[in-house]
Length: 395
Image (cartoon, rainbow, N blue to C red; front, side, top):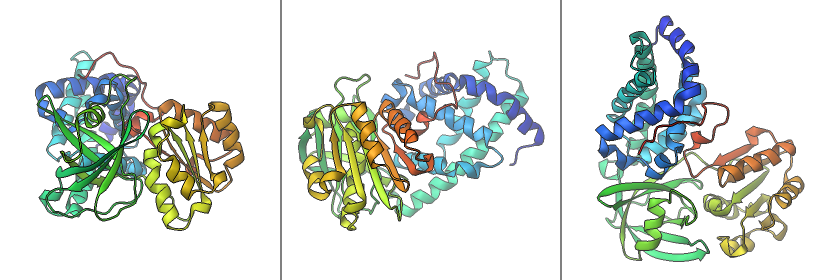
């Protein structure tokens, strides 16, 4: 049902409240929703809840949707990115009314329980419009996978586990246990692993590190020992899982991909960010395009760099840069490497990616030629949307 002119005006008038306080409101959503529906914890990454990136991403999503409610088609790239994550996490249509219910409860609570019914109704109506778009897109995604057995988490086995860099950084090769089809994917996509710990399910997305071979899926996992909160799934996989053990995963998803017909591909990876680019670089090599492919990989020490032997083998010597010396060397390398038609792919920590974007701006490269992939919810990286502050803890 379309919004009335009165509802549109209410949203326009009240959206600044969400811009200033959206993360606090979405933190309230998750706090109450998980208390009433603990089963929903099975489809959310708890690390992203604890570090606040998931509430922040939801706040940015809601605010952008409200600001663009008359032309949501302009947000299609962001909608598709989120819809892929939803499908990979097995979000279902019946989950949307639950989130919508707690959105309104959270707005009312933030307003001190004095929320005007007309305000709450306008926000509810807007949410239902956005939710219906996601439900329809995700319904199509599920149907493209085939029957129900392909649409959820599928049993696989670890057939190879190998430490490939200091970290530890470990590669896993996974084979389907039920004899079913290994679904195709494009370089840049990810699979979603689910493990059980302390009676609860935990999920995590991992980029596929090799082009599709029709037999297995391969990922790389790094254990973040010096960061809090520690990644639950990554820590469990590295410390407790061995060759032959079963795991479950959902089939490949994601919108990140190579830019077709690019004249020059430049990949800039910080640390384990190389795991996102490995399959993409290998795919370009397979297509005979190593000559227009450059990789800059920034790591503290060479022992912490994954795929060094492989990259040295397939990339020309002057197009593989392993940088250990910090920001100045990166800035100088970019100044020498970036061309007018370069398409740039970046993955690493938010701090690293922000610095790279700053250097690329100095090179005069337009934002349309910069393509970012993140290990946290992507919409939590948006700048100058919702303020990144809240007091409420979701877990």
